[in-house]
Image (cartoon, rainbow, N blue to C red; front, side, top):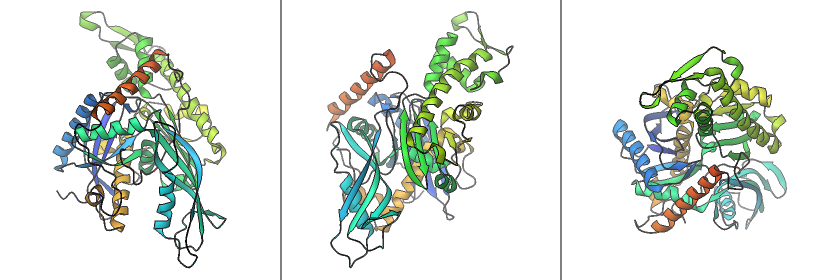
Length: 459
């Protein structure tokens, strides 16, 4: 199969690794050619905590995708998330040389590139620079300044930052798995592309992606990203609550949540009981579905309250005509939309990644668990289209032709000890949070998120 039009999204999640291969058909729709999936063994709360285990999981997912599609996978678009993600608002200024020439795409690129030169805190780097609006010679509210006349080009930016270590560890894992990362894409940005439609993004909508380790939030209004945030808890914490509350093992807790769980205890009948096999011949345990739903609802209400805090904190609570779109694995929980509507007072729907898919795709790809992966494919196709307008392929850009490469070749031993020690440090931080010794233990806002990694390598 010809690889020039193929794009691969690699979703490195807390509970699963998903490798999705896709391309654009003749009608402009996204055609998914195949999916590879494996259990995620080395990721905790959205960040790599064990490089070797993560590499093994990536290789398993990629191998399955290659076998299903016949495509040799070389480049991948990878999602990034985690509690280290933060954001800031900044206004940038670029002074042009002449009024005689029109503002060009290159002028806009220069303005955006300048934003990547901002000084960050030690250990942090800029991941995305997202233009919100442009100002040309003090004329505000411009969405696209290309073709206009003006000397002073300004823009308001939503800038996403993250830990250098977290980004490097993703690159390291991909490299050790035999892959090159073309783009690191903030996960809720990818999910938004997959499940939101243009009308919702214009009217105002909050995208809430409930994954295993984190809950990611992206707020759009007037087709502009307005606010992003990460809550460092997701579906896994609910499974932990079930395990503790029902005194069963984690695997059983996860099965209970998926098969019998509900976000509303009022929807469960008092006399509904499920029997859990005992360990090694022990007596089976009987679990009340009413109690199960009560455990789930208590934790889910807490997560939703933090989501609602972020929505109110954005200042756009009253402007989100499209309400909330919830996606990710956690969105499959029964009665979750009803609970979210009760807590927030906003309209809620479940987002499926089929907004832009062609007919005849694999049925399972429309599950909310693949929203990020499908969105990564879409963002990868946008990136290839942008390169094509400059007469470049991904291979060209990776080799540094006509600009700074996204992908930097690494020697196998280069920075190996540094990357591994960074991963171990992340693992220690996660362990501190779980033990309650970290100042960040508990639910709280850890940052904000969104858009494209331009001209950035791994250094």
